Amino acid sequence: MKKAPEERTDILPARALWIDQYSGQILHSYDPKQFTAGDIFEQWLFPLHSGEAFGLPGRIGIVILGFVPMVLFVTGLMRWKHKRQKRGVSRGIRPTPSSQSTDSQTRT
Image (cartoon, rainbow, N blue to C red; front, side):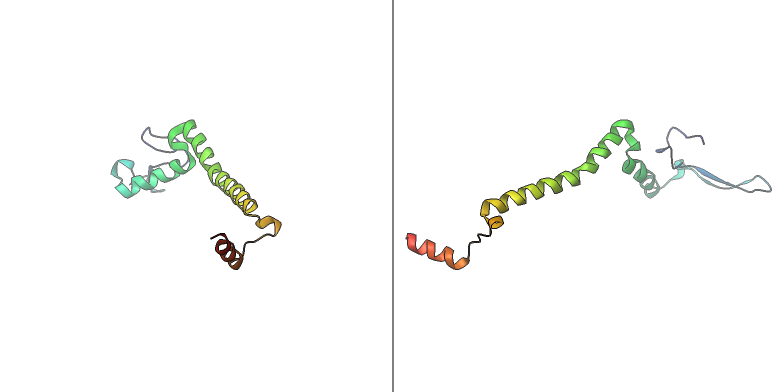
């Protein structure tokens, strides 16, 4: 399959022809030069998602962005655990609202 220079992806070609099998006439053509704005947007979706649109740097960027949710989850879990330990919840010590109010009354 031959790719035109203005086509966005190697995997999904932008142009297509429907040819009559008996007469050889072109029944319909799907040409990127006649695309609407929606067609152009749709043609960019897969290359942007796969990283193919910007070559090797784009693919590396997509891989890095793929790890972002995992890193956010792990760091969030670490922060939550640290905060929980700092409050004493992991040792079973929980401040009750009544003990907090009596402490503040005895100090004044």
